[in-house]
Image: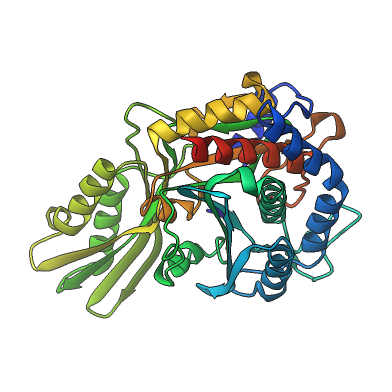
Length: 416
């Protein structure tokens, strides 16, 4: 999860406070013989999955450097007998599980990279790489991918369709998804839907999603001011006009129907000689707000400056695509997850956090998909899984929860 450090994380902490603790349920996934087999694998290999996660946690790698992580994942997928491609969009790994019967093709995505962090690692299996840690939960995401692949491999002969497991590099740099797409990650076979999740400070045992926009997209802009006159004053006037479009400030934005907000930040101001330059970032939740903001920046700033000074704005949309869940698939996925976890443990996301973005949306721009938040907090032990927080600790029972939910969601998607 890419984090904008201009905003605090406390809005995420409120998620944990609003939810009561929930146990890790162990009912079949879904009820019936197939669910029994999946559950038996999850119970049988639970310790192995935890150790796999801890190995990744001990050996974190930042965006673009996931060489060891990718090798470990590729080896695990080959040991399951899956078809494996490596080096996709950098260190990306793609593993294909073909069911015993022809049917739909769907995908599951997990990101693999860690982040720089100089804070002490509070767990016993602490990072062995100074200055780098898994404080965003990608080690759990990758482990859940392994767990789901292991579970579904057990029932491969009964599966109708194919699952493409996508292990993505460079999410934190927000380049990995686009790099994998450019490298034909979905060339053969081509999924018709994609699913994924991200750790969040809901209490362990819970997950959350919503139809439609779930995380804001990010755009970039640059404004060049030139000519004779007071360019510094002109830059100030343009910056003031830009900020009327929607300034950074709220820690969360309530989802409306349709969600429509703009949060803008001027990140760089430079005046030199006969030219001034402003650069910044925009966070938007809809195509309409993106189009409106683009027009304002590229066409509507000249009136802010005096005669003899020209203003030219450029706008780069979707530098990070916003996470927008397919409305039909999201409702179906939430229902399937509720069968595995209990409906009361599947929450509806009601706010969009402008501080966070996720390049999972780049995949959704190509094929429809659904993204979940996975609870990893444990209030009784004082663990709050706030992504990118120095004290981030995840309850490892979330591996079972995420694996159960995703297995149920994927099975349901194949059956439909």
